Length: 101
Image (cartoon, rainbow, N blue to C red):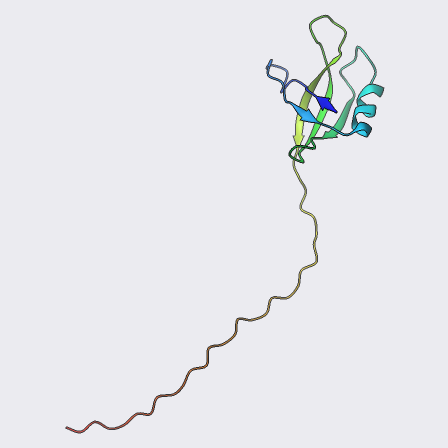
């Protein structure tokens, strides 16, 4: 579903994002005419998560959205496998011979 909140309080620029139905349902359940409660939504285009709240649209109905902050991704623990040591090069010993003078 298309969702276009304002970039921040001082900007009229909007961020265009696609969100899933569950996030849109959370948005619809936010209380109208209040911008104190926030929710986290995930942009399906780029995978980033945003904390958003209701914002004044200009008519005073608070139907618009506003990004409060962008959630930084947390490092997930993955299974690490031991790296194999690089294969050693086989070196051949040179036979040294005495030089004739």
